Image 1 (cartoon, rainbow, N blue to C red):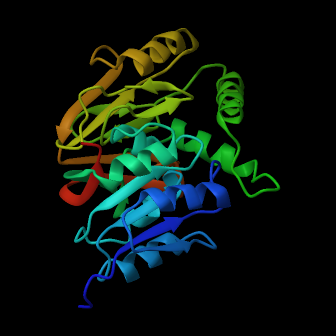
Image 2: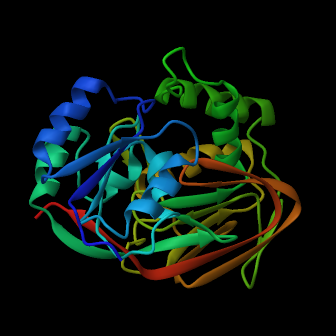
Length: 295
């Protein structure tokens, strides 16, 4: 193994908040020496992280959640990772205690402390904060179908809200059971959390599974036989946290969750479309990586 020669900053130039000027400001706040490596195409971050892990003191990532996910799937956990908010939402970095401002986040991580965290896996693919079958995966796919803007950036929160409303109206608020959770019963869709919040709506955190934590197993929220009159209740659950009850399965701190789909359903992990599947096995990977967090 080559001796450590400093840290690496992986940058996605197409992330919503990333500019050349921002990269330089972030670079100035991080420990030196520092090699800046931009991604050029999907999948690059996985390869870069895999190649640099053996020689870097730390790997920093300035991007959105998609590139974070690529890095998580390229490392073994031998060096600490620092996730800097550069995307439209950047759920993982915010869930780890960083704000939305990347320069301030870089300053915090320069003197940050290491924290060992669990990751999730679904059908072998790692995820940092969440994965889902059905509803939220379909929303991810609809956003992806919109394509990217001329500058290469993905649509933002308004586009997501528009697609969510369109999906609800198109289904008239009706989501019939489409999957079976092993030892728990049928559900319309499944949302699996590795931390809280599950995601953000702009500045608003959505702690769908408020007990979920990077130090525990996976949590699952799976409503069944959803009707239009249930939509307000589900919106409240997204904001205040879901509770087990009639037509609402909630599981906490699970090492493994197996799901069988009644027909092929879209699957997402950390906001990345993984295609349609007929089954999904969600697993917790304890102590998978070490991340840098503010002191």
